[in-house]
Length: 367
Image 1: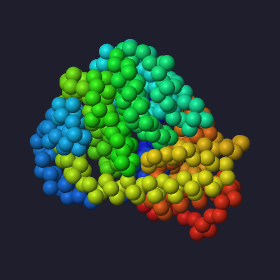
Image 2: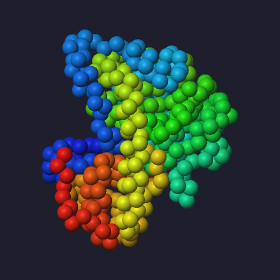
Image 3: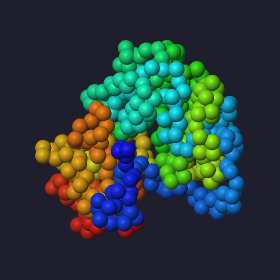
Image 4: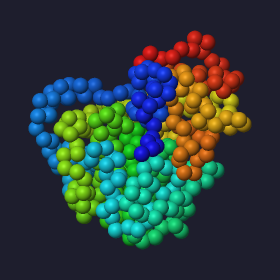
């Protein structure tokens, strides 16, 4: 299978001719602060539990999630990353087709195609900064259809109006709306749709990005009870390992880490966007989260060409030409630490031959 994602460190390192830990990876959108401080201690204290099967229903973690979102625990289903749940959803819903505003996350379409649904893609206009207004979506909505909406959207980080999304779901009760809030934790004062009522509204959440634990795999869904029950019967038993479950409980209790992450990422994102804008020929799109979509506005350059030249410096970016609705000019970069962001921008400016003032002491970061 073609791996249509960022973060494939082994493959990227092989192409760069280096070890994986020598690569500066901007292709995967992970919290630049790293995991919470208590993660190592939590794993160490619970390592003896790996000799037993994990709780197949993730009951304690589900209770933590239910308290966090102020919803009944019966609505919560935990999975081995949000991807496991995303791929299960189209198979259990009474739908014949999927509507996907694009560009958007690669796996919405793949999960729908594997469920043998007819996939309809709606390309968002660039002049609208790649944001789908609800009035624009309405004419395309039908009964027995599943609609995938990134909130915020990937790859551009744009945020939709929460109240409008809820109103849209209420106006079309025979259409299922999957609201993917995988990166919503990064947004300060975000108003989640998880606690909104309705029989057709499903909220998908990831913990791997915000808490920097993609290797542990942890995500969850908040859905109407009938859908939640079907999901539990569909996903494989014991898919969430015991260490992921206890780390998940720990993460929901670490409020200081969450506050620090949101404030730090906002500052770093604004700084990175400003530096990218200063490089002649690069146009970053507005974002609310820990990544930026960037367009190359220079003739003779494609994102793939730029990525290859940057990778030779052991820096990886995410080429976005496999996103429906985007062409060869687009790439995405994660927001990393201030120093790492500086290294990226200096390298981009150098490779593009741009006029931005650069640090003459450019070096490859030692990770």
